[in-house]
Length: 64
Length: 159
Length: 249
Image (cartoon, rainbow over all chains, first blue to last red):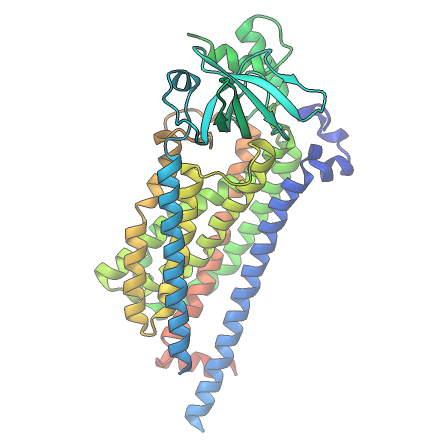
């Protein structure tokens, strides 16, 4: 990958994806981390939505 | 009925988890907290006989020889006092180099050769760009900037 | 400890904390995104290649922040659990249970990225090494905390039991941190510690710190979001929650 610190401008996308032969390990790390973060965000949003629906149902029941 | 089942399931899962954790911890403390034996300890017959154990040290400079099959490697592991010859067939980690720290797992043969089933490379906590490593080495050894591995042995070989 | 250090006492009643948390979330989340973008740019485009490990060392930029967060979150969680047990404040127990899932996530990320880093560098996905084993125990502690809380129906008893587990388990954190000093481990020592200069290039350090702060802000956003749910759930019979639900219709 270029000549280290000074060579960033010369870096091309294929170098970026292969990561000097460690692409699987590097992208496996970053990919799974990103995936887990996305799952956590969706999970938390879902939880709030489900909870508010439940509370709304409860308040309707208590009235009717 | 239902919440009770759920609770039971959780408790069973929890107990199973704690059981697995306890087993793992005991296993780890039992076999690995004393992580490896040095070549001096092995030479003094302190390592377990006829049982698999870990041998750790530096790969001696110039000792690495590969057989024609490309997979079998001979090298010696040293702590700068004693050296133990090691033979290993398999894929070496990328950081395996002469002068680099290694930890090998295997058995000591009757011929005094350590037959490794596993070779792990140990690296240190220093991270820097190659140019800096070269410059540091030049400053340290006053020339011969060819390999970074001599940086490590020059530290390890002080005694 | 800025997160725990702000004077929450003023807002320690769930009813007054709920709207404050709601106002904070968008800000904290935006800061997390900005820091993550800059941090990732530094991780891949600014930080140089390592002299020994080539590009594989770039895993460090999530591995180390995740490992730090896994320990830090546990300590904060145990702190809240202790506060809940001692002062009997309702919000503390809710904070503790909101912290656990994100803490478990970062523990898993630290172990996962460690495996993916260990395979090419050391030559093994997993080794029964003191550092690795104690981090795995941390994951079990988080899972134990969450299952114990879920297993007990009465919320007060649930927080008491799980809180006790969290407090007992905190002894594991210093063991994780010092394991590389106390034992002969395969895992290398700390590159950044209190008693010496960091042993890495400054752009690498910048990338790592940026990612750490991004994870930190992410954690705060997640915890605030989750604690709002906890508050609604546990206070669902109170007037203000009922009024709030009415208002939303």
